Length: 189
Image 1 (cartoon, rainbow, N blue to C red):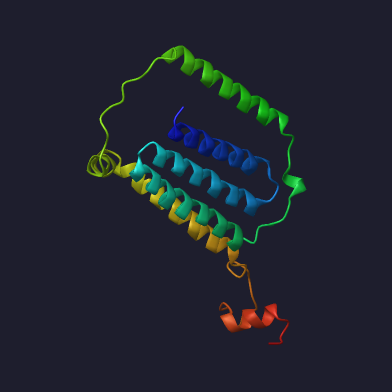
Image 2 (cartoon, helix red, strand yellow; image 1 turned 90 degrees about the vertical axis):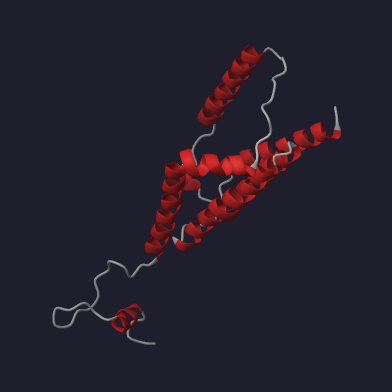
């Protein structure tokens, strides 16, 4: 067993451990931070496997964008940040389903490869990856970007309590923003 194998196993253990913490914690913000650790450990695994481009895409896209978007959505929607006992469910069904799926996949992989070695294809390049993304995968790429943008806009709309709330009206016209601020503060500034 080489040093790279040990590093790969250690990073895999960190990824699995933090992944378990993501789904077992009752704190939403902590779950997001454990997700950052899990995705960072996966990026480290990619680096050990000499897939530097995939590792940095993992860091930029998932850690840098998706997790930050999740944390901003939590902050903008003013969701409860502390422990939420009302959202807690028993963990044994999820553990049973996850364990069964893991066991089934393990049996499937062992049966498919019979512990033999697999010939790896030639190493890819950033140019080849870019051609694939922007020629045959351009539509899913753009749909994902629109989905992330709509999630951010939705979080901003949900965080604004004054949108859609009727305020004091004068002459049948909607109230200006100053009157809404006065109504919120009880007439004092």
